[in-house]
Length: 124
Length: 147
Image (cartoon, rainbow over all chains, first blue to last red; front, side, top):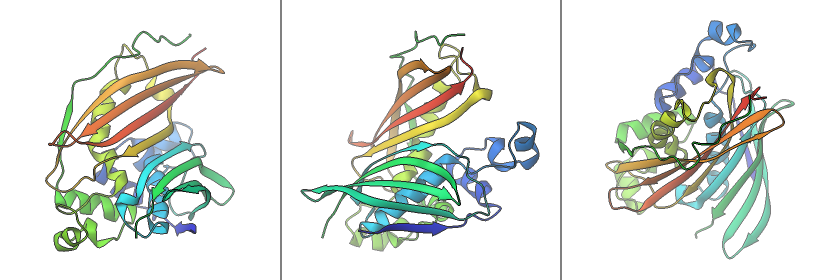
């Protein structure tokens, strides 16, 4: 199983994700506000980045959303729009059709999701 | 100021959310999911779902409204300006489909302090209209400067 997903969220992605998720915290959608609280610019929603890890895992398991049984992550570095996110992971354990995967997401050297742990159930 | 853990165990009123087909599509497009089971009723039924299926992380859409009251609860005492979302876990059960009515109940699971930071952990449990558990979320928020 190969966990490997690359995606570059465009400039307006945080706005679309805000609308889709209901999280309109201005640090995600307002550059001026983000700068006023000491951020370099508006930042990605952590749960958007987590959704990329989830997508990488279900894709690796064959695409069925029911294959993802559990996912836990830690949010650390801030993610930014217009920079490529790379999700990678490897199988840590496999038994009885259940696969435990360790994954992370980075933008360049910036690790935005650490200690990702997914439990996948493989079906045929 | 040390954290106050008196709110541990507090339960918030249930939060109800009705899942719509177009809302699933909007969410799926935003996060880059393109599996037809998230968009097309026939494809979803062929794959064994009752209706268009929600991507696993759609859990955020129907459960965050249940967690928000805890984050803003003065009894919990989170300094929102200093808060970051530190960690998240979801454990999935029965799949969620368009037309489902999901009820989520959130509990303050733990409040602790480590290295001058406050850790606030909430647990949300979401069930569908038939009482089946669809997802259990653990939301960890970290607040800097608690001591």
